[in-house]
Every structure is written in structure tokens, then in C-alpha cells.
Length: 162
Image 1 (cartoon, rainbow, N blue to C red):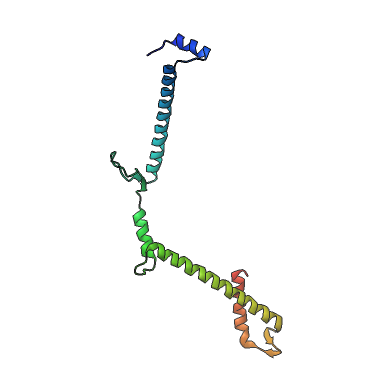
Image 2: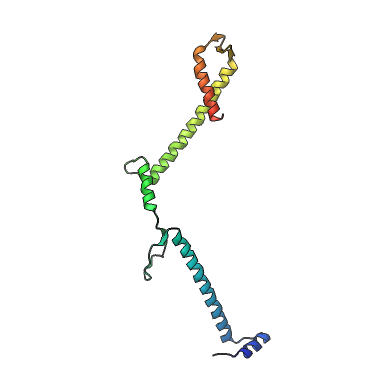
């Protein structure tokens, strides 16, 4: 059923539109929204393709979900990471990386304890020892054999920023 323009305008002024006319308008609006969505989808797909992603499946009848995967050099990068890690039989790359992260955390904790001990050592040497004429005296005795370790401890603390 088709309506002429003057009838449609009269019905709009009166605020009453026949059911068929409303359906035609909704249909036109939905078609416009669908066209806009398709254009946005094309823009998004072009952006993904330009970044190295690709569709995992181009078969229209397939029910795989049409997912996107990075088609770049992901396998090559993963192999490089695996080759750079120390090999441990039976462990995955993720497990080997987790082991390295845990080792680093333990080393960081050990380093913090060593810095604390070194700072305590220096505090005790400075509190109970005396530097006089370039020589170090501890408990009123010359302790020249302590000068080199004390100097190394002082330099280590300065380098650590402690």
C-alpha cells in the first residue's frame, strides 16, 4: 500500500499515522542504521587488517565464531622468547618465565637484606671506630686491615643510593 505525500503530511499534522506507514518508516530507519553499522564494521576490519590481524576463518557456513587472530610474526616472536630462555625439560615457556620472575624476586629480597646488613655494619664501624690521620682505629687498636673492607662497603652503599 502506497500513500501520496499530501496524505502523509496531513496525517503527521494530526498526529495519527496508519500502521503500515509507521512500519515503512521504521523499516527505512532500520535499513539506515544497518548500513551505518556495516560501514563501521568495514572501518574496524580495515583497522585490524592494517595492524596485522586476520580472520581465522573465511568460510561463511563455518560456525567457528569468525574470530580474529594476529597474523603477524607472533609464532616467530614466541620461538625467539623460547630460545632466549634457559631450557628446562618438560616446562612450558610460561613456566620458565614464571621461574625467572620468582628468582628475580628472591634476588631482590636478598639484595635488600644485604644492603640492610651493610648499612648496619657501616653504622657500627662509624659509631665505634675512629678515623684518624687516614688510619682506622677500632676499640682503641689500629685496624688497618679493616680499612679496605670498610671503604668497599661505603662505596657499595653510595652506589646503591642508600
